[in-house]
Image (cartoon, rainbow, N blue to C red; front, side, top):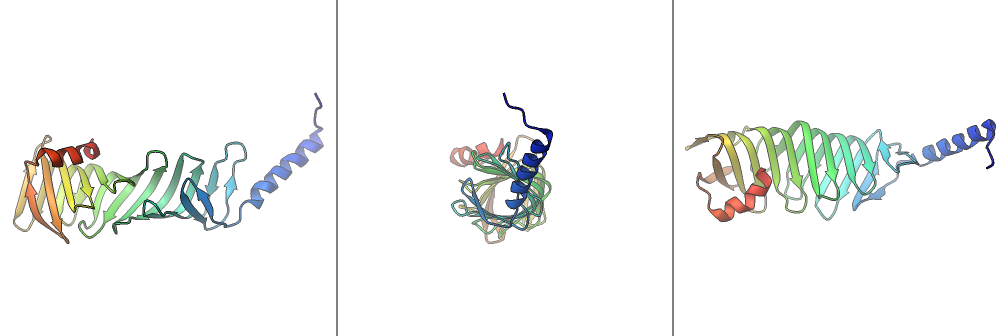
Length: 219
């Protein structure tokens, strides 16, 4: 086996480093169905294929209707897009902000953590330790101590279906809006029906079809 001299090894290492830097221009790339536009350098790991975007950029999912803008991103080929200091807008007009998000390309989900907030035509200042966007169905799930300014509410878990303007809360929960007053222990479920920014109907005994539709997102 021919061994490379130390000098040649240093030259080849320098060449690979230069190649990595040469790929650092702010050029749009296609990544797992996403169109990613970096703001600056693209640092490619030649061994793993992972790419770090230290100055962040934007990622658009034309099929899922999501647009993500972040201060920094990491791309794992065929697996995930991770982002820090992220803002996501959805097809239905929702805006989610979080310190950290991970887009699982295979599962079709976006998970968010760290100062997570969500706003749309129904919710104002909805917050939770963690939220999940299901890209295919559009469902939004908030978990672990959910709060909202409007409607004024708290819950352990909330799942929202933007296509039907309905949400289901998992107890313990409490809602206080206008004449609506509702609270329940840990086993409770509350179905909310929205019209614009107001809750027009609430039921503490959702029928089986509603339960079956929401339960997978409340787990």
